[in-house]
Amino acid sequence: MIAKLTMNNFFEVAIFPIPDLVVFPRTVLPLHVFEPRYRTMIEDSIQQERMIGVCHTKKKISSARKNQSIKEALSSNQATYEPVEVFSAGQCKITEKTKDGRIYVNISLQYRLRLVQETQTLPYRICSCEILEDESADPSRLFQHQADIINLMRSIMEQEAPRELTKFDETAWLKLGPEDFSFDIFKIMRFPPDLMQSLLESTNTEKRLLLIKETLSNGLQNARK
Image (cartoon, one colour):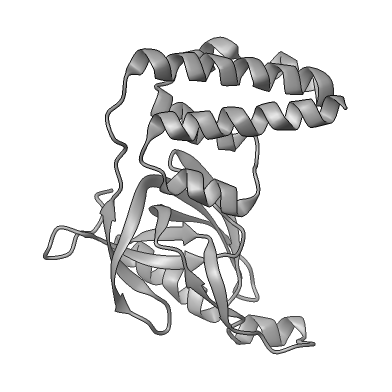
């Protein structure tokens, strides 16, 4: 399916802001959608072949009403958040609809995008967005960082999750390009949301790999104390 473009050749994207959720390209994200506006967004986006961007948030704009019943929550919109400007987006597929109207979906996040302009605010945001590409870099240095990170990943698994080592395919990880590797690593581990957001926003592959390596190294050292 081809993503929908605006007249200025930007991507037209519906925005799904979720606090503390940072997702990288090359990820399939399952979601349970129950708010009326976002159920509408899902249906509209599939019908109009519009991508959905899943993003971390800057701040809460308005709060949900307290002490709601399940029925009330399903029939009213909840808290509203201001989205960050950089996020991942892709096409959505519905996997299940429940009798009470909830929707289960998989969003195949393909692109890293930067928000350029908001074109619709209600009932949900639609924005014009551009692809955010990494800068060129020396591949030999990048692959060395990649190998160092893989060694750290193995050491962390040996210490904290030895049973997972049998599933850890170092050869497959080494075969990935450095940019894809720096995204795919977050399929199996998580950092604090704001740190992950800064990694997503970085267009310098080497700096992103160095920060990942530093974070893993510090975590391993702290675990050994």
